Amino acid sequence: MFATASRRVFQNAASASACSNNFTAFFPVRCMSSIPSTMKAAVVREVGDAHALKVETDFPTPELKAGGVIVKNQFAGINFIDTYHRKGLYPRDLPFIGGQEGGGTVAAVSDEAAAQGIKVGDPVAYSVFGSYAQYTAVPAAKLLPVPEGVGLDVATSCVVQGLTAHYLTSSAHADLIKEGEWCLIHGVGGGTCQWAAQMAKLRGFKVIGTCSKGKADIGESLGCDELIVLDEVPGTSYEDYESVDIVSRVMEVTDGKGCKAVIDGIGKSTVDISIGSLAHRGIFISFGNASGAVPAFPVLRLIGKSAYVTRPKLLDYTVDRAELVSRADEIFGWLKDGKLNVSVDCSFPLEEAAEGHLYLEAGKSKGKVLYKID
Image 1: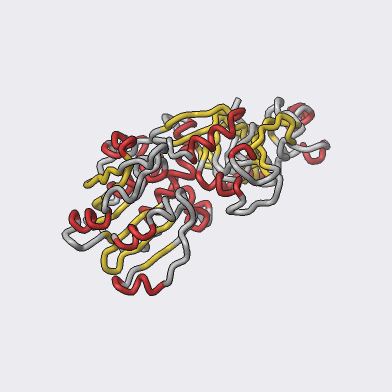
Image 2: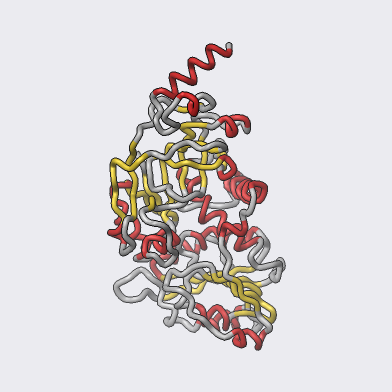
């Protein structure tokens, strides 16, 4: 039996250059026989606008590492953080493959990953750098098995936006908001905050959402207790946050108390609104820069309400596999039970990488935006 297994591994390895270049390295590896030495990928060689994202057809396929797998991607998520990397706002070493959210099937498995029960062909989703490509090397500890009944497009959507919404509504507020108290969430017509509005309701919070008129149909479907619908900035799909006195409306809805938590992924355009909408000892959770980075402000601004502010990131709320899986299990459970609805807005072919970024940055999305990868 050992000889048969050895021959099988050798035959697979001989044609799977992504795994290694010699038999010694191949021997412990299980992999598909069709992994090529080069692949299609959307690559940034110089930071810049969306057209800095160039699709290359001969980028080296990543090698399998101990404790990891190679995933053959079917989808990659497009997120605002990807645009920050592309622009150089969050610097990365050049060149780099864009993206950090993907879903597909396992194409190659290291011995260590196989010992954990991971098999070639398993459907998985993950968050690591380099997902805008046909293949991605992923540590086994970063894999999320996709349960039966959940599509790979939806599972891929869960990884960054879903997990972000989960920690925003369950942890980032540091328990300063309790069931029955008010939470303001900006931009509920878009991606992450569609998830966050629904999850906040599942947590028992009362939710005030903001969205543009063009996305009011999405906002109204989320179960918000109050929806503040804003005009759009002329010529764009972005909310005009000056078109409504949001702070006054929040105070009216909350009987003058304000919100115990404000979840804000908009940034520059909403920072004053968010701070002004806080309740006594409320927390301003600033997690994104869709309208530009939040400018520095003096901490004394918070003294009037003894308020709190945090600028969290997903990696600090998925610090180990136990935390990652715990969050994902709850999300997948809500999906399977029909308690959480995911809107996949559209899928761009990877060849249209720049168009995908332009679409997201124009504020047009009404849900998750993906690349479909062949």
